[in-house]
Structure formats: structure tokens, C-alpha cells
Amino acid sequence: MGKGNIIGVPNEPTILTAGGVWSLGEHFRAVSETNWPGLIVPMPLGLSPSLLQLQGPNAAWTTHNIDVSDYLLHEVRIVVKYNYNGGTFRNDAQLDDFSLDGFSAGFESGVDNFESSTVGANPDYSSLSWSATPASGTAGQFGRDTGGTPSTGTGLTTANSGSWYLYVEGSGWTDGQNAWVRSPVISLSDTPGNLSFAEARAIDSAALSTFDIYLDVVTQPV
Image (cartoon, rainbow, N blue to C red; front, side, top):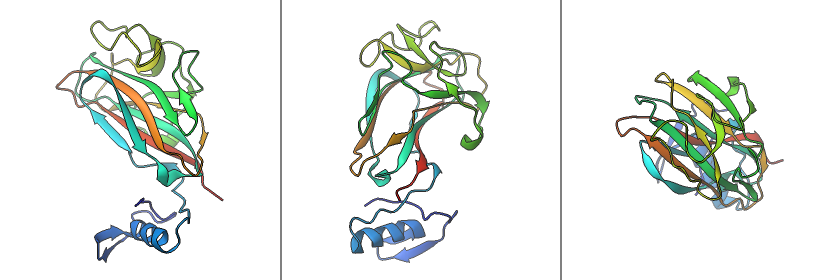
């Protein structure tokens, strides 16, 4: 069963159902799917709740799959936020092989139209300034890289596949700062399947730095 909020109802109330306490949006979606199968409930415009959060070190490329079936027939961007917290220069993190409903990005011939935002102190997503992701890495911003990150002993020297990946350089940060990267707009079909991507994190074991994965909903079904 999918879950979502009712558009225009921030901090929506909860109701008691036979299944427990649900938000009004969850209840509406459940009733809709039961009584009107095939009815599409639009997801709210803008940044979704975090679909996946990753924390701490991960010394090997790992592929993650996230069910995004609730977003069928929406236009979305894949969004990744890196939050720096409690570490040292050993906080480099790497991304590769994004795939979603016919869209793919492996960064072998360029940045695949990904945009990035420079490091900031926990800004609101809607207020970020975006530019083309740099063709090479720079501190405080996602960039394209191959063969290992510049900081000694941080990051993998290989990509998940091919030779290139995106990475964020962990040097020169202050706790609580964020760097963001996002895909171009992707038009989802009625069977979008999973969002898939690979990541690796050369993060100190004591650090609390995190990756969060989101969708930015650009348009809803009509």
C-alpha cells in the first residue's frame, strides 16, 4: 500500500482506524486504492520526505533500490543531500550508476546533466542555487572524478562500473554544512519500478555524516 499526503494539508491531522493511527493522507490513499483501483493520488510538489538515509562508513560500492511506485506519471528529479557532521577530511563520498524508469547516468562521458549546489549551512532546498556539476571535484561541491579522490586514503580508486563517478570532497567543511546534487527532470511512466544507485563512503567511523535520497516532484499527473 502506498502512502502520501493530501495536497495543501501541512501537518495533516491523524485519525484512528482499524489499522491504528494514520495520517489523513495515508487514510485517503488507502481508501482510494481499495475502492477505486487505478486512481492516481498526486504526490505533493517539491522535495519529498527522505526516501533513504545512509550514515557512517561504507568502504565498498553498494547498490540500493528504492520503490518509487507512488510517483507514477509524475515528473521528478533525483536529489541527494550530503550532510557533514563530526568528521575530518576523511569524509569523501561517491555516487554512481543512477537508474530510474529508462533514465540512467554513469558519468562516463560527462556529468549527464546533473546539477549541484555549493556547500551551505543547512539551507532550504527551494532556496538553493544550482549550476552544472563540475567536471572535476572541488571542496564542498559534488563533482565528477576518476581514479580516486584527492585526499590521501579516502574514497575508492574505482567506479561502480566504468571509470567515472560523482564524489563530494570532505576537506574544509564545518559541521552541519550540506552539499546537494540532482538529476535532470525524469518523466515517470505508470510502472516506474525502483530508483537504483550505487554509493561508497570513506567516512570516519566516528562521524555522523549522512546521505539522504529524495525525489523533487516537478509536475503531477493531470
